[in-house]
Image 1 (cartoon, helix red, strand yellow):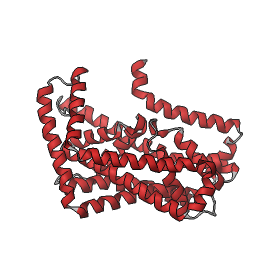
Image 2: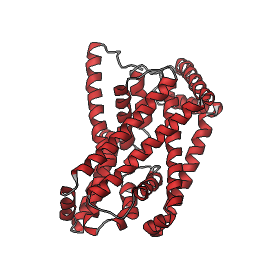
Image 3: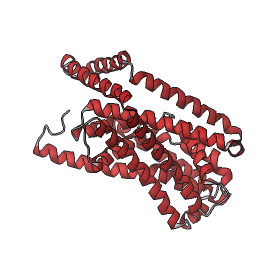
Image 4: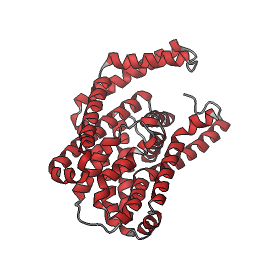
Length: 349
């Protein structure tokens, strides 16, 4: 039972959150209204929401493909898409998205990508994405300050808190990613912990391999300073990811036949929501996502359609990714089993 809970705690928490929302909707007699609103969504705008979701997924995958190509490692786009979806799936089912990046790196490693290249790629993607989120959210709030204040009402402090947390995290990660001593201290600690837990059988031999990978990782990051256009491209790709994701709410707003708020106002609220909950240490930030969405958007929707909009928004911004990522994880697992039958060492690290 403990092993089951350990392996599936994240998924169970997400399902529990969904069940709680259903119970609240049933208690408020909103289930019928929600179902009616969902059934009457405009299919063209639903397709636009799917297109925004697909744009987010593809631009995220292409960012990794582009970065690796600039490091001299060429990955086919389908492989980059699989790695991205696997990373997003594990980010969604682990606390604070802690499992996404390691699993993405592991999948890329199986595809022949050096760990040093995938590690530096993951960290650069994180920094550029969070930086663009911060910049675009600040631009949106600055140009829509009265709208934001009037919409979020007494929760404006959450918006400010989101800015502070994001700025601190981005600054800390940038300092860590370029500090040789800190990087080596982190890897040494991980090796000692692995040896203590008997996960690492030969710490001395593993340390030699890890030290070489760390050196390659640091070299690849330092090399970016001499290629400013590459970093500019990464920031532009990050901006595309942020905007594609944030435009989902705009498509859904019109899918429900609503009007009154502009695309930039809706995108601004989504940007503020994302950065407010992005570091909540819960699987998929479940509970926090739904709660902040309700606080930020409920005044823009009629009472009879609010629960329906919440379900649709959560589906397109999270559950759809979990379904796609889960399908890729299952397919990848089946493929790995076939390889092991042919060669027991096929997936060894």
